[in-house]
Image (cartoon, rainbow, N blue to C red; front, side, top):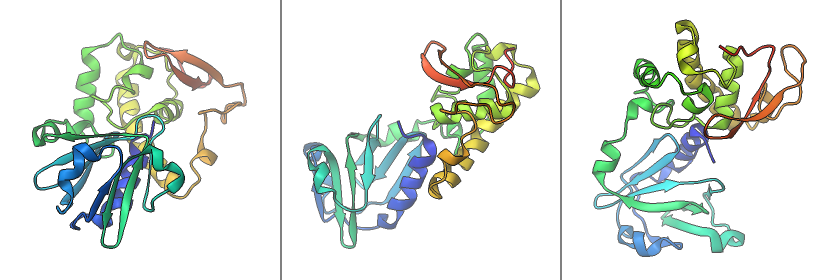
Length: 244
């Protein structure tokens, strides 16, 4: 599932169509979205792993799910997987193997924009307050909670925990205050590094722990294990990541 940084990069690619009129609509979601033909795409917003296309009379939510993708040119080989294609005077945007559905303006305005780790509205103090409500939750699950860290996925989780030296099975309530704050800050810091490296096509070259065999710090074998109630795969070094 694409994490927040690639979704922001997608928005940047699509941004050139903001303010343009939709000339044609295609794809398997056309029965739900055909009303937007002839209307102007007013704005593109992202929140965590969600993308919103804002029109005057309708708003569309796009979630790429596990294997979704997009392109600025129509891929005929993926025609059967096309969920939504919007064509404008000078090009188009095409979304494949994803979820597309109309949403009310109230849904968008009701999102917690301070929880989006890549947003200018990101509020680390609010994230800390939410974490303290459930001290027994493991940090591996906490970082994946989209109500607290919108946009964080398994890559960011693993790499951020490695950077701050925290074992993924540590309960939130066991973290010293300085470590809790460091984890919260690193969730955002790594997200922006992720975006920079993804844009330069060097993300995998910069992995320190995710799908790595040896620890980049001590050289010991990286442990791969399903952790937390979510049972998502964690990669960690038992020497350099402390279990509190």
